[in-house]
Length: 166
Image 1 (cartoon, rainbow, N blue to C red):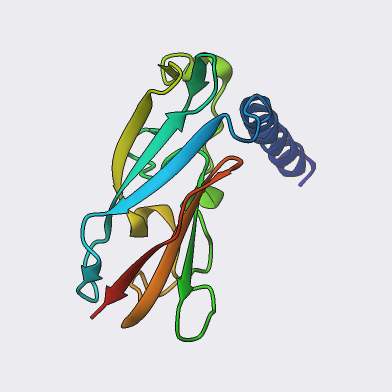
Image 2: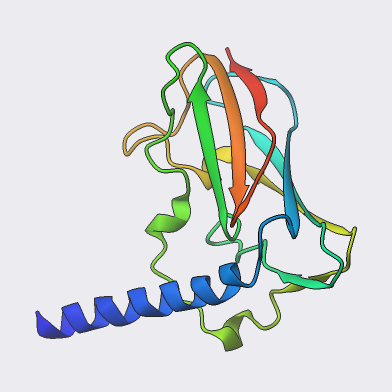
């Protein structure tokens, strides 16, 4: 039991240290995040393709993470808020699937994962929204209804976009 606790604390420290080092290097307004839906009407049970664009709005080059290994599926540092417009309730159990990742990345493992983004330049990647968030333990899909999506990339928040599930 002591070994398990020690391993857990070590892993959590490694995750929080790596995250803190990266996220603290980004100050408010140094990057912006934008999200676009492939379409604003989705069939229930279908994929919800989104494109995430991160733009360097500062006056200096920024080293940014976005893509994780394909096996993980979700982007670095992205949290998605999905609100049911009728009930005004969150439609997700967790705003990021990254919470379930047990992989601890060292700085050496990440050194080739950074994009160097010059002022005014952007990086983009496409995902299925349902690979970013967790709706519930036993249901992967959103119910029929009207929704509003907003992303957060570390300390930058996107504009809200609306979509409908039929």
